[in-house]
Amino acid sequence: MAEEIDAEETDSENAELNLHSTGDMLRHAREQKNLGIEDIAKTTRIPQRHLESIESGDFAALPGRTYAIGFAKSYARTVGLSEVTIGSQLREEMDDQGHSAYEPETSGYSPANPSNIPPKPLAWTAAGIGIVLLIGFAVWRTLFFEPGNLMDSDADTEFVEGSSDTDGILDGTIEPDGPALSPTGTVTLTATETVWLKIYDEAGERLFEKEMAVGEQYAVPADANGPQILTGRPDALTVTIDGKVVPPLGSADRTIKDVGISAAALLARADPSGLSPNGSDPSTTTQNINQ
Image (tube, rainbow, N blue to C red; front, side):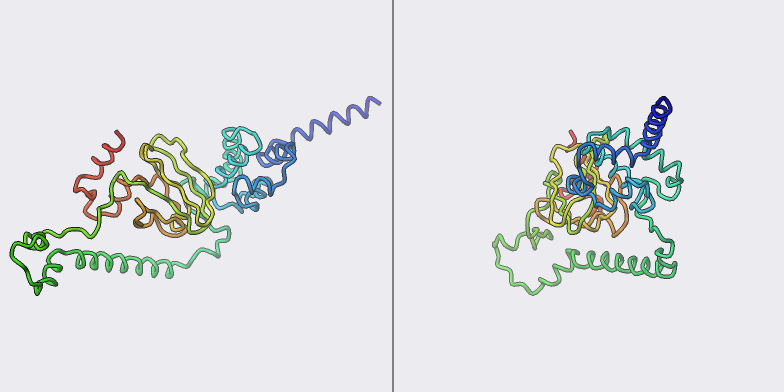
């Protein structure tokens, strides 16, 4: 009888020792709540395959270190565990398994298979094409928006003395077709593909974090202090200011971090002269907005 009791105690101790990994803790908490893995995926909007990889400790199957920790924290909140504890423990497990070396938190997606890495000639060719396109766009923008060219195209226009419609052309100024974008305008992010992102302020306080579905939108709070973004798919987001599309935040499959998404910051990125629409320094405009 005593031997049976000792065996039961030993089995109980072994079960507790086996419940040390992050995946085991999350799975145990989920089962305690009678939830399936698909229930967690539906609540957190994280792909089920990533949740299964976290439970099994298959970190190589996850898109990256930052995403793995973010997914685990969302999972922990859903099952009632401390996201801080889970995040810290998962980070230690990944360090122990050597994942910190191949996937730093500020890097983008890393292919699981080295054969998926494009050859160097192809990469250099793509980079060269990109540079040519950028130079072409700069030349086109300079020529198209040069006031002298517009004056030449209107050289044959018949002017009527005293007409208010011609005053702007005669004195060398050109009236814009519509109102200029405001550095205090409303910034809206619209997902064109399924994409995970995190929005936080200048102090690092999280404002928004989830995997957005196609067509889903997020409006950046007007009172946010220096809002910034972290995402691995900036190309999957359309950014608008008061409904008008502005240049994208980045290229495909390239993680961006600490990129400002206030209206003032976006306008400063889009303006090659470094001035905001009202002609002032963008840093001064940003300070005024934050105040």
